[in-house]
Length: 89
Image (cartoon, rainbow, N blue to C red):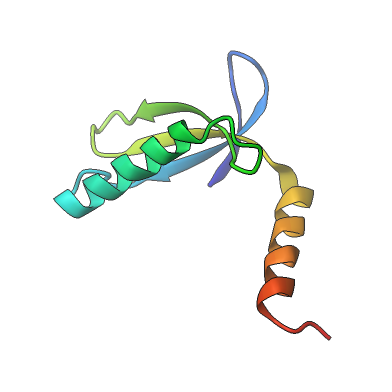
């Protein structure tokens, strides 16, 4: 994942690169499933919004562009998961 700026809107976004998305049937199915779930749940308040999908020049990779959630939200999320999974002392 990378932090980037959308050139059209000047908004900060997160970009995920899926390498060799269609290398084999299993990877292709996994990639397709991830994109379909993200599109299906795009209005859910607890799911990060997939803004756009872009094909790489090499026709092997795919870029998924998400809304940017920021460092504070990420660290908050990690802390909640850790507290639910482990005893923190």
